[in-house]
Length: 198
Ligand SMILES: CC(C)(COP(=O)(O)OP(=O)(O)OC[C@H]1O[C@@H](n2cnc3c(N)ncnc32)[C@H](O)[C@@H]1OP(=O)(O)O)[C@@H](O)C(=O)NCCC(=O)NCCS
Image (cartoon, rainbow, N blue to C red; front, side):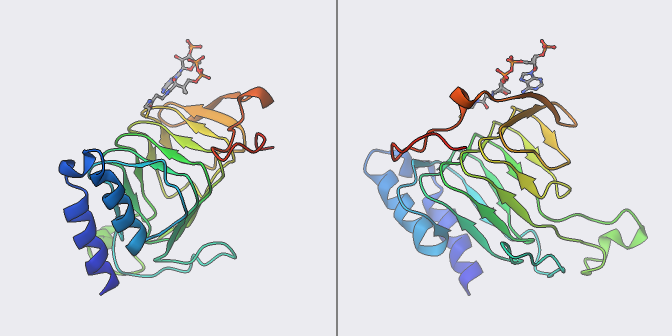
């Protein structure tokens, strides 16, 4: 029932008309009514889809994440056409920004002949934690091999992320590789005005 409601909300409130001043606040209210999204999202744009990639459950429970659940922190930004599959369980920190068209995937299809059978064994799932202040740039794809995107980390535009991303690290390319470590002066400053994250 909740899944159907979530899909309905996204179908209606994802429409571009909710980009108009005033109406965007209504969209934010609607998304927050059906998802666990913290206070003061900076922005939720058109056609943001947060969905279950499939309905099977895999053994991915961790102390922080549970399959089929997504928890999103405070002051996040979700740009147009962001797509998040949370079948494996996702926790997103505070002040995280998702740029246009980035895609988060938490399920895989095995490479054997059984891959089209849609059984739990043929579709392993994986959890994902995204640290406070991370930025997933436009058109980046986060694959199930990645379980952690660090605090303040930046995933470059178009990157295909196959492994964990350490805190304060910029990754880019396909497959994504670290290109540098951020200096402290470049760490995210939370939008509530408190000091930079360390
Ligand atoms: C990754 C990014 C943040 C820049 O980080 P940076 O540390 O300043 O990196 P630089 O620009 O100094 O580039 C360093 C190297 O990485 C490469 N690089 C930078 N961004 C890259 C990317 N997205 N993909 C592949 N390579 C990239 C550069 O070509 C450069 O390589 P070179 O040394 O061989 O010339 C930026 O390039 C990026 O991808 N921004 C996202 C923009 C976006 O999504 N905007 C939407 C806003 S809502």
